[in-house]
Image (tube, rainbow, N blue to C red; front, side, top):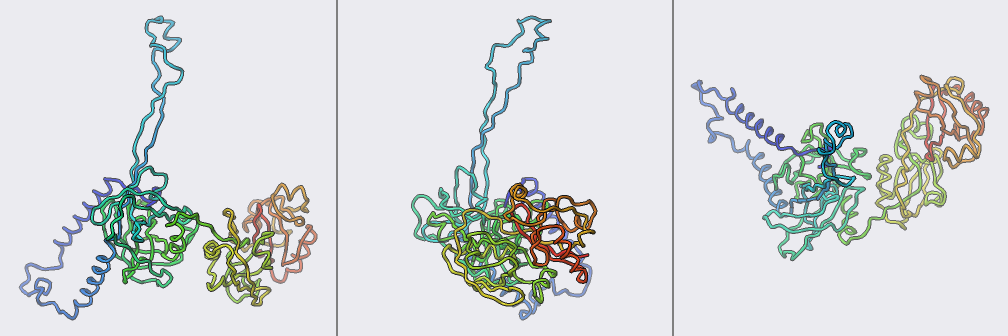
Length: 509
């Protein structure tokens, strides 16, 4: 697992074993069976158990055993080592002091040394994770953080055969890496089968296999707790599966397997305040891995798609403002010049509800969909424009760099201009350049009073208001007129620019 998420400590493992032993002892001496009772207990006579009652549990256990037996041979342990160098200054000579020499002379002085006295120490940092063999050519799938910045990698198979390995391809933005075994590749190399993670439902049974705390070939069981988890902070592009199957340090890179023996995820991280299993683990979906695997196994660079829009999630207040019965899709708050979005005639205020064949859940989901689309692909977008359905086709472009298209969620609070607690002035070309906004007209917020409605709404000094209720504003007078007309509604829809990004805000009073 990631170092900041989980740290392997010898004492922690010993304590866990001690506690487990204590629990077993307690279970063995508890009041479940009364040894002084003369009545026979069915728990003490296994032959009396009803086979029809026990059969379902036995069949489920057999199913777990069959899945584990199928997948374990293709699960490997990944050992890494990194050489570190530390240079520290040597201790200074205690006799090399002017005051000391005044009293005792130069006879106590140490021999002359160079001006800089430093010693270099070399150390070795060792790490361990898990992985899975994905093809007969000896390619191993694992997490990028398992092999990041290491000097040496060794891979140990389930049958104890060990190989040197090298990094063939990485995608840090999804925390995925592919290794290649070196030397002669065995013909009998076992491989995993990647399943369809989109077919998973909350509650489906899964097994996690890996080397928690260095205990290779460990199998744990649980369910899918949630799908589509994002904003976890594991990687730039997240669409994580959540599971309660016990995952601990050393499980990173190992498979999460469905009851057909197919890999549906790669175990990656845990949510825990103590650095070990606390009931919440995360895995990268197999379908996300599939989109990367072919390129990574051939050493190609991952190139992501770009649409060229600024977006934000649709709140209930925004939905009503844009003619929608309920929140869905994502709202376009900015369209970049000369972008695929601009060429497809997408507009600020459009709501994207479908991207190709996928219903858009939120901004993170759309970002992942666009990024995983090959540049040059034509994609049909279904929109809500001015409260009515619309369709456009966009040709996805190559993403030169992360463009940070997601704007901050809107905060639906505000009041009329005279009650907002703000001061404004007309935007000038000099101010636009200074504030790094790509508009020539608007109203700049020059001050926000503490404890005002504007401050509570999240308006900031230097925000530029470019529209109010979809009407361009170029002065405080125009803004005031729009606010006055909106008195009966007690709210106004503002489009603001903040350091190059755009966002809609519904202000209420």
